[in-house]
Length: 292
Ligand SMILES: C[S@@+](CC[C@H](N)C(=O)[O-])C[C@H]1O[C@@H](n2cnc3c(N)ncnc32)[C@H](O)[C@@H]1O
Image (cartoon, rainbow, N blue to C red; front, side, top):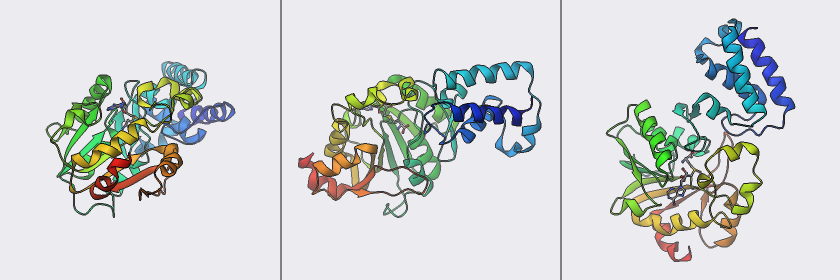
């Protein structure tokens, strides 16, 4: 069997199975190609010639084992192959942090235009997980210093490995912090944050793929708004005068708008899919901080 034939039969098996997409791809065709190309360390530059390459017996066995883990155990492909792509960059991905998939990737690729008044000098990725958002921002803004903060030590270890992967030691640093508690006195031009925002009740109903991810990366109190509210109340103290906060709340978006109808959240739009990401300036956060 060659690479192309393996991908074709895997596409069919994926399409027939009750898989949940959204951990890197959104359909069985791309998911099958991702699993096979990444498992064999094939470069997309080798497409389509690589499709004709014959698989060895050992390769077929390895692919079959991973395919079964995807189909039966519903393990996200990023964890099986150890790599996830975010904003066009590769990241090491494993169970220490959620699989990167935030729509903030598109904002990074567009360099946050037209939201920033000037090129950011200091950037914070709060609740950074494996560091994908902050590291991608560092790569887009080569003049910026970036802090990656998370409560989870394993997530920060993965983020550190990703800093090394991209050769960003010295410009990107990790900091263990319970939200802003470990960042006192620091000021940022841009705070990027994809915090946990799923309610305790919803988390148990999520598709099986999510249950391979760290629960602390998903759950945020009874309503899902516990952490976003604390971030909205405190962020102004950590922003420079013209700084902005970009905060993802996903499908908690309608609930947040309903709870705080007077707050002028700017809900950002995405061409590549996704929703529930807001922007507020420091001035707006100061004006409404008591409501949160
Ligand atoms: C939804 S994940 C986002 C990970 C990464 N930013 C991404 O987009 O893939 C949320 C992260 O918040 C972290 N977290 C949970 N509670 C926290 C807290 N109180 N302070 C800081 N980080 C926290 C979790 O460890 C997890 O890595």
